[in-house]
Image (cartoon, rainbow, N blue to C red):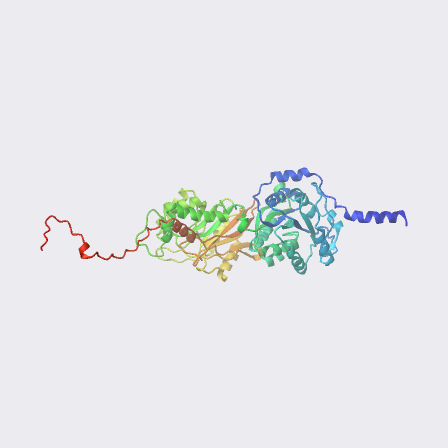
Length: 582
């Protein structure tokens, strides 16, 4: 046997066990990124999305900083096969990887199982230059040195059958100590304005949990790993984990000169909530609540510190210190209105404003059917009162700048003392033609029918017209019950949260309910929406008041009358002039 053959026999098995060399060897860059990253810890994170261009290393570091408190045993890494090097729809390897912080071990028994089943190919050479893997390995080695990885490079052309098969095979692997990590950039090769529009479509589809819509995304206009996005979403969305988008940026933000070809980046985490996980939600940039009313049965409730504290605590549990925008139903008055018709709503100004201050209300919509219940003069006085205390007022047909976003207020029905009715017409939408699309414009609509939580054809047509005029999100109120979740319309071009129901109204849970829509707004003019459930605040406040109400003194049952003593034992009344006859 020749020397060359002997050498090959000896070196071959040894080479097969050598770790794959790292594309990046300098640890300082990754350490600096982690040191500069700021993110609230998400202790029950089951999935994450990170870029793999080190131009966006700050986004990668921010996500890993949020993940750092989790004790992962296995990390499944999904990356696109950038160089079309896989001989099958997906590829993996049993070999370990080198990183700037040492070796990263591969979950070889999992890789071998997938290879033996024929679901993926064994392609170690693919991973030598696959930056989708190498860009995240330093963070894994630094923060999770005991975790093992299952690397999976997915073909750009993986079809729905391949996605379904891989999802079904990976689902049994998911436990509390497994992370599903998608290493993928988003919009490619478009100028900033077009890239931001494609990003918004993707973010809206993710917010709506629209698997069908995600499957129709275009590569690479929307994302460079549609298959990876689908596999991750199908694995994690079914478990109830909620997606939190921490960052969305574009490579244009790193350059002063105008770029005709850019890349977008998303940093996000799928996080479980409830139980020992707590809320696990970062504070959003702006939150929208539904109908807000503090009169009738709530008048005495909001006048007490206990009632207000119960309301504030429930909202804080859901959204922290997020600034709130609400649809204020009724008219603020300085003192009670005697003899008002039953459906003319009023609320005392001082306790209402005190509650709004404690809740962090920054804007109120007066585009509804109760804001003019007591005429135009009362409406204008209320509007001025809100403005005096620093609360912005959103009116019908006007666009109000709230900083992160601008809001168009529209009311389908307006009631004056003469009970006039108005539907939204072209003249109400004309204001949109005078505004740019940055920051994003949202529609805050008072519409629909009470207790009906799905839009009919006429409301969908109005939503389509608003989308055509540049509105990127529509938030509804008036039905007193919340729609189940947002819906992405027109391929994600507009997000519709048809009804948020009640934030605070004198209706118990058997009648009304509500959600809060939390918005995370990003510098490139995109946003991500999270619809968060809240308890019935009317029930919560009245229960708190009952708990502290003074208990009445127990009523003592009357004692039964005692039998009179015999006559010979009865004491005579002491009277000075009493005479006894013999």
